[in-house]
Image (cartoon, rainbow, N blue to C red; front, side, top):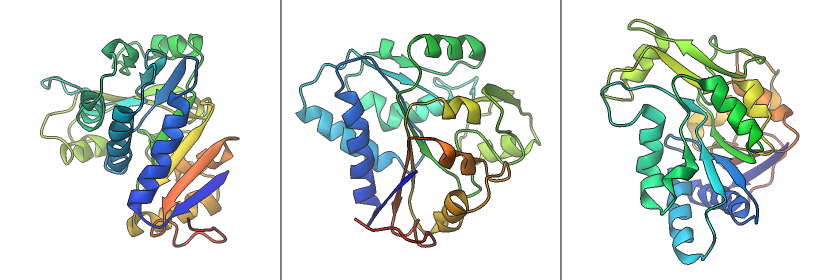
Length: 241
């Protein structure tokens, strides 16, 4: 486990973008899995600007989503819509190289991904409750591969989704579980802000427990936590860059 602590969110975004760009420039097929949400927005801004100044063959770069919420009446499902708005629509990525996680047929998706070499780099955020992807406390276990969580009105996760989108969600969430995530060759986990300090301390230094799903991520042999100073406030013995 490697921990990188930066002075602020802007430098966190630069460091994360540099790690993604390093993979993008490999002269081989590269399978990336990038996260939606607020934390990666700065990283995407940097990536969009850097890609404008680099002449590089992008045909070998493929993008795989690691979770999805169906929005039956929307143009895009939840995660895909977020990634389109934050990154995909602002680049010249060949849409054939973007592989959305399907609501149905997730085992076929997982098999196809494995046949194509698996994920080379997965970038993850973590929630204040310790979740990653859609691995929420009480709704996942460490033995899960790619799996689905049934939801309906009145269900905790359904009601949480209503606070994030004006569209009504479908009947399930699909996500990479811990076992599927840990198969990735490299993980980058980032967090920003004082509101993440307590959970980051538990993820990095506390017990590995399904009550804090992201605690399992530190067992990966090639994981880097990128934290700004505020998020790392309760983590001992780290250097700030």
